[in-house]
Image 1 (tube, rainbow, N blue to C red):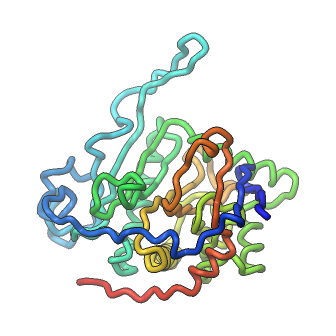
Image 2 (cartoon, one colour):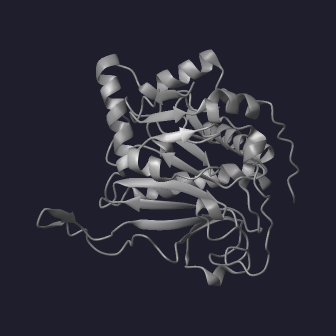
Image 3 (tube, helix red, strand yellow):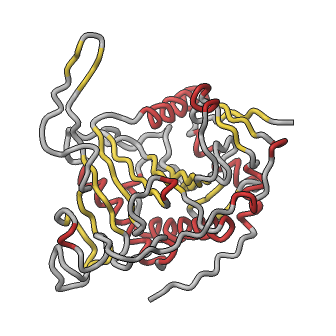
Length: 338
């Protein structure tokens, strides 16, 4: 019998289509092959990208030259631009403003790699520090309200370049998806006096059936109302509303959990295309008690079609319980190339 499950955060309903259930092997995709050839993100091609905004570098090396480990540049084809004023205005019943914001690319390695998992934990930590540093810097600009960090891996997930990288888009408004999440969490807090995400973490740990990876301070699990097969969320166990408030020990552990989770997905599904998104609290808020930052990892194994677009429902053919059980048992041994 199919199940309808409600996401307590967004209020969205998901159809878990158990009668159309698929095995993990049914989702395996063709392994990505490194194409090689010219890549503007590779070390030595620094003059082929916009000027460097920041980088983690070897001592004595200069900006826009070799010697970096993680490098941030402006997107060559930005969705939003830093220069200018918002100029909010009305056009009849419509609202409009200038497309002011920031659009940056975090190049994760000087080597031409296609997965973050090809890096060691220390290097992944530097990527997370870069995320944090850019959010801290950009939130100083009073025009900016929200910073969305995301990663596209594979053509099906929207990646135009295979070299492992993430992006940061900073906007002057709160994205509607985040607004819905915050509203749902605020309603829960008003009635219960607790953070919904904190309750979710405690319940997932107590049942254990949807846990994928668990460490002292972070947990990765398949959400109860998973929209997509093998969808995984990573949350801090202790309440924290802002990603950019992460401290050293937390970043060390988050790097391990994130890399381990991605390794499990790659090993079980033969390197699927995927997106991950960091949802955090808007810049204009201090620490708040009702919202909890988190990472959503979405393998792109199925397509959104007419029913989904027309109804707002998602159809998931793999129960989160079976997905989590399968991933927990996946070996993650992988050699890091020097």
